[in-house]
Amino acid sequence: MRYSFTALAVAIFALLTAVVVAPALNADVAEAPPNIVLIISDDHGFPDYGFMGHPDIQTPHLDRLASESHVYTRGYVSTPLCCPSLTTMQTGLYAYQHGYTGNDPAARGDRQPWVDHYKSMPQLPLMLQEKGYLSLHTGKFWQKDPAIAGFTHTMGETGRHGSKESLGIGRNGMQPVYDFIDQAQDQQKPFLVWYAPFLPHTPHNPPERLLSKYKHLGHSAKYYAMVEWLDETCGELLGTLKSKGLEENTVVLFVSDNGWPGNDKVYPSELGMRTPITIKWPGKVAPKMDVSNMASNIDLAPTILSIAGLAAHPMMPGIDLLDFDVVEKRKYVFGDNYHHDMLQVDRPEASLRGRVLVSKQWKLIVWQAKQPELREIPWLTKPPSDQVELFNLQLDPFEQSNLAIVRPDIVKALRTELDAWWTPREL
Image: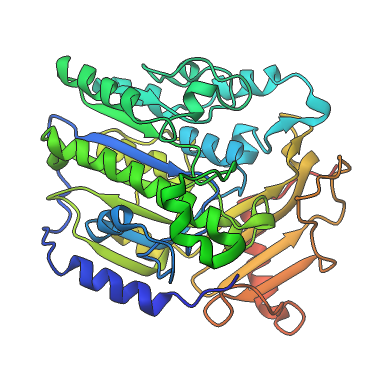
């Protein structure tokens, strides 16, 4: 599946923002911090939105949100798999730092060593308590109980993945979110809503009223309908904020945990790693579609902390995405790619497949010469025979032509930056 989306996306965004007027960012944070809603879609390809130029998928609510937001169309997740990606958002750390490189210990071993290590990491919800925030977790949580991250409200323990209740958010309605917002309002507390529905993730079982709109598009119909189902739930949430008079004092952020379609999940391709990242802050952030600067999920925790009037933890390597001068000066974002299964909590390189550097023009992927010897998973795309891949993303956004051999100068320069970011220990 290939898209030509940039020109159409800009045109759509210009049309939608024609009626939106907001002043530039005000660096002063009010004494009463704003409410924060973080929307995290699940297994969602970066072009698969109306505002990103998709020709068929209808996402009117997310389109409207984008039109009112600062949008980084070149957002990335540092690890294209849900557990490490979500853990990065919670801790503000890369997978090689927080230890969760995959979804499960190899051979379905004991998760407790990873949970114990996770507890020693900085936790965004816990840090927000300093400013009096109440916080609700919904969706996946891989560390058994969201309360250990400092969430003040949860939908119960999740085990390794998510409970029936927590994974049902959105699919089974939004009432737990609305009840939490009411409680926070009653207590006159600022709140964080971690809205992470199991959408458009499989099972692809959309309502028939949505599926019927896409059936003529063949095998993609169910996925497209799931994306619109996600959009509907976001519309309900945003509409509730407005009806309760909370829209003006609530910052809404949007990101996906990793990409789709199919085998690009858990693979460091653009379709696996890239996601739009949007930030809406009425009266503080002017709407803009940024198609050149890069953002990462590693930046979400420091950005949210800054919004709340807090400093980032010293361990956090990300930047504040609302500090536009810093964003403009950023040269690279980084990522790592692992097997689905984890081997050693204190040796992330044991299950490492490759490392990634992305610049405004180039993408470098350096695959490990020795790949982890773990179980074969049918949908886990194997690394290519080329140990080093170099792509010119400006001319080749879907990575069809490996230029590593013909541009060794670029490979050498970028490899130096990649190694400076993280050089794995020898196994």
